[in-house]
Image 1 (cartoon, rainbow, N blue to C red):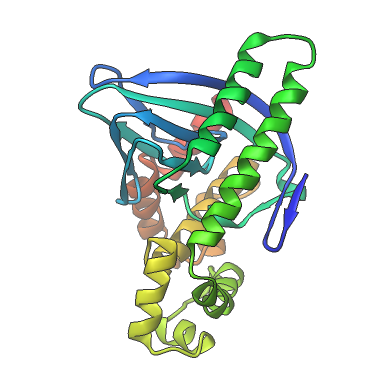
Image 2 (cartoon, rainbow, N blue to C red):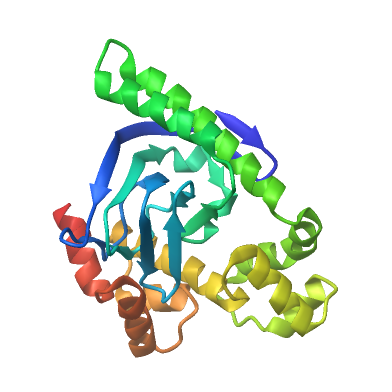
Length: 267
């Protein structure tokens, strides 16, 4: 298990680790979320990840992308897009991936050869299928995620992170209630303009988009549980208007809440 402030990780299982080539002929799309965490290293080429929230992220040689299992997106590329991918699960009750309160985290550095070497070691071990390969592969994944996490933290502005943390914590606790930018800026002792700018710089999305991503996460969890009606889930996630909740969900996931529940029951 990796442990650090706001980041502790208990890996449950690796599903696949491989080198993959995607081109314009092959379609790659996850309309209901990818189902597992994913760690991607771009070997060669360029691709655009189009998240169903409307966010678009372009990755190229040497970039590393960590994806949430709840991230709904498609990948578009004009030429060959060569990359390593590791799909894995974590024990959610004993883990916290603070970087993945949004659908993805992107690391763009001039030199990521140290990460590339770990991807090669992990992939080769996984593909070998030798005795103990699963445990050894998990060991490499811990190393990879640890390096990735601390590279991300070193890249970020630590002062901004700590100033924004009270607002971030408030959103995570009260996502189901009305929240204003004025409240959040006050918690961070900043003007609304500065707060909005610093938040976007650090988290690559607006504060209320962050709140909406949390609402969407819990909506999916409640739907998966099977215990609540769509109307009850709308209320629990902060939507007074059920029709608006259904439109919001379909816009971000690609299907209605009812359709999503049926898809989950089939899997």
